[in-house]
Length: 207
Image (cartoon, rainbow, N blue to C red):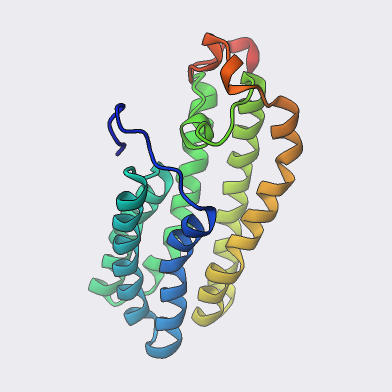
């Protein structure tokens, strides 16, 4: 879901963007600690919808990844509450991460640079740079899926919720920082981007 071409997305303060992304998780953590996983899940679902609405109100667009994540939160959160089984909300991150990894892999196979849909508003890279970024995030999503499985299957619910709030975000931030050399090495001036660099297709020789 995007704004019209005549109304470009507004620039958002990074701290506000972080608050919109972390807010539902913080609500989840606090409500779970006070009232348990089922009340926490309901609050998580409500906070996710509110954050999505605020995101659209501020940016006039809803980024793809938060939108997809919100859909899964509502579906798996709903199953958790309806069946009174916390397994579903714990499985949600695993399935979402595997899905994102599979989408990126499918993009490589079909010569499509889906990663550009997420990051091209932040920076411009050569085709080779986008391919390297795609492979890195594809593997990272697999890592997060495996890590989520290891935590929820071997630790308590409270530990898993704490991991969701205080573990995943720092790990993701460190991973993003580790990619800076790749981004810097393959960055190009947005005003000098060749026509063939703007497309999401890539030549087979680039893979």
